[in-house]
Length: 178
Image (cartoon, rainbow, N blue to C red; front, side):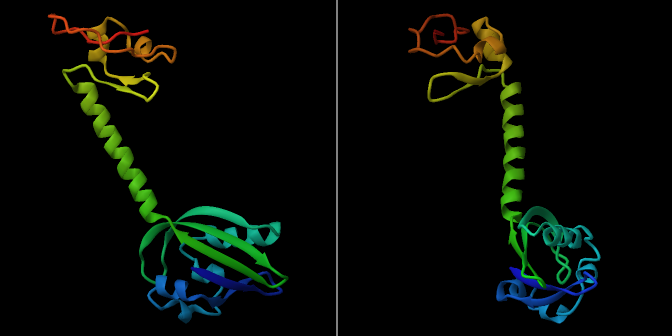
């Protein structure tokens, strides 16, 4: 969505024009606000008019990630906003919704935390190995089984070689460190 704001002699920004994407994002209601000042439109979010002033005064494009509540629908989401001064009178504000990306990142963090806690609590020795055969992460049980510390097992200089031959001792890690 994109909006065009006109700056008057007093330095006030008024909503002048909206593109179809902005109308769609607001359920078609954004046209009702043409002529409204940025301070009125974003009364619930005073950082946005400040964002507009920053872009105006710098004369260069300004980009910010913002938590945003849609005035027309009340919906909350994350946006990346870019503002740029256009000539001596206008400011172009463009926004891109990042809500899905933010929610996916938060879900990934929760999932990783849950997996990490499961691995830490597991009665088995568990470790993660990268493509270069380095142990990048291990639980305490694997350290106990091998006789090394977690820090020693995850030293960058160490690599796993081929698995060692099976032995009768069930606590053997079945690997060799080189």
